[in-house]
Image 1 (tube, one colour):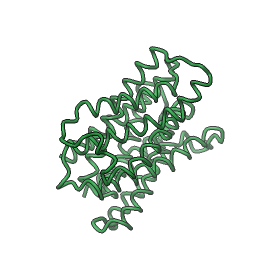
Image 2 (cartoon, helix red, strand yellow; image 1 turned 30 degrees about the vertical axis):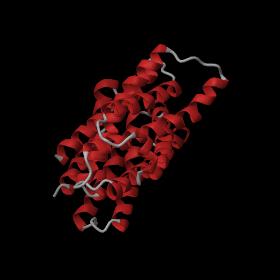
Image 3 (cartoon, one colour; image 1 turned 90 degrees about the horizontal axis):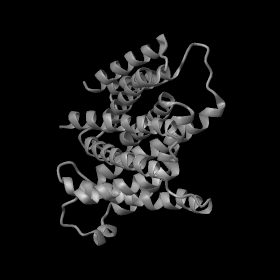
Length: 292
């Protein structure tokens, strides 16, 4: 079950990156699309929720307080993802977000008694980190464009914080043997509701000041993104309950980087060098080691 969920989560996450890339092609307004995205994700989650807990009782749940912080981080992170994918490229954005794997892994090793970093996992993690760097490089003499590196660096820290807090909530408040589907759906619905409110503050107010009306194409794009956003977040949250941090995050991240790089070549004609392909091989080796 865990393997199936992580594969589905990877596919949905890469789909989000592709949607962001298409935003640029169709001149989608990121702010409008992101607001709609969070509304649709929350609405969809509440629609399929069929538990007994009433919405008015949500603030009294033990996971509500950390979900507020995570919801705000989600709103800011998604805007950074959209901007970085368009300005720095899909591969660079993927690498920057997935290099943050070290943050939740180190946190898990120190704070969760059930997790530990053995020699094989450390080697697998190091190979994963090396694969990110190799896939990122275009050729031996390339240097990173300083004008494009600010957004990926910001994504690194935001992604690390998001993953760490999400895993913390999963471990502390949603034990895999006790949690049920409805409680997890309700949590994700709450998370996106908070992100929606945050997006209204961060993006909605500037839109009102500029007197910009919501365009139909932005509403459609945001709605599509919202569905995939919910599916990605829910399957990822569900899947991480089956794995330790040192296993889940490196496997998830190297898979996203490798798949997004290959899709970049196929769909967007992005070129991969010999070094990049070596990075993909190391990514596969890292996955094999982490699954031992």
